[in-house]
Image (tube, rainbow, N blue to C red; front, top):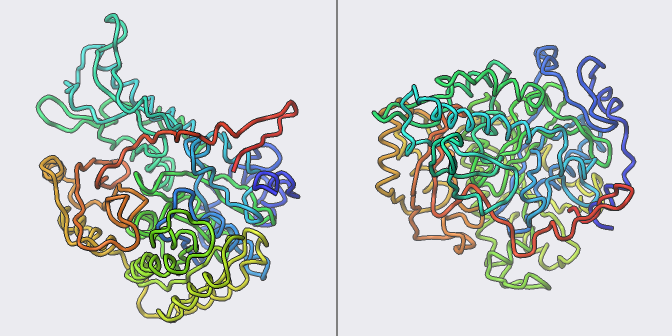
Length: 556
């Protein structure tokens, strides 16, 4: 059976039953149909005296284009925890329509470790991403409206940094000209679109801890500069309240369930290669108050999502992660060893590719957190391949579990649960706890260098003239103590997507630095990275259909 067929055959419980199991009352949530709900922010206040549960981060080695099952392991692990008697909730990101109709697919897991209703979640869900897009584009519209009506703020039309957004891969929108035609159509200027999940509104949405915090952060967004060089904020347009109003329902975390009826929060969804790649702080904190164990994931590999989870999200929100699970697959390791086909047993390329796993293990240990490797088993994997990975981890002194959560659901993650519990106990007994990689007070270039050398393994960093000027400008404006959100390829530890395995003897090139003042970080563009992806030659959309009864096929 395909993922969607498995999901459609699921024995789902009504969402009120899931809520009741979590200790929620009727006034604590609002149902969106039979199997979805929005949870009120008041739940956090009601449960503020509850002890926080243990926080487990699921990340991965550098993936193949198809991904290595990070969400699947996250779902499978929380199912396994509950099946073994531990009270656990998963906290995931919302899928973007770009990958759903492009190449990578949705973000609800796979096989018998999925979140349901799978079709609803992967499509419009509860409308959060549409609300985020609209709030973002309200700001865009008001900027151009201000220009049309006299430009009282003296906006420099050549220095407007705020783009427009759409939640779809559409390369034709990377560079556009707005305001063409007659005078009533506005002031002609160059502009562009980014995908919604790369929007600063999305980043703010995921880092805000209340409606008031959300509004304050939106007001701090720098959308451009005056002709004299002063920064202009959304608060100067006086529309932060209106933008927040569009998000007042979206900010409430979404409650759904796994195939085994385990509770899951799915809320917010920035990409980790162009944003910070983590679900919302509100959903994570709510899960921590309502369960003993929270399993969450961060986008792409540990050099991207996990680093940002630990250096940005955890630091900003005051979270204290307790353990890290690194997902590895034989397929990806063979890919990093130079295998071009990835079909059939290839022990030579597998052994060569193990250096990628080695580096990610080392990176996560730098944050003073215990690490467990989860081998996500594919049906095509051979015993010889799996044995090599297990022995490698054992030789490195790292806990490793073979996971069959795709085919067996929670039961296939029992070994992983046992090792995660050992890791949590190790963390509990250790005097040294989670520590971010760098000091926020360090110079901006120093923070970037630290990430590049310590996490990517680079020899150094090359700053273009533009990047250096950007940094100087932001430091002069008072933004020197912000964390760094690296934007780089997910295909390599380096900034060059062709350098597989564990690259050595390379420099990271920083082409540009962008200010996300509302989110509270600097976005550092490493290598050639774009914030509006394109569709592949044969997009997944070609395989998606719906019949006369509304039954969807082809989603994965």
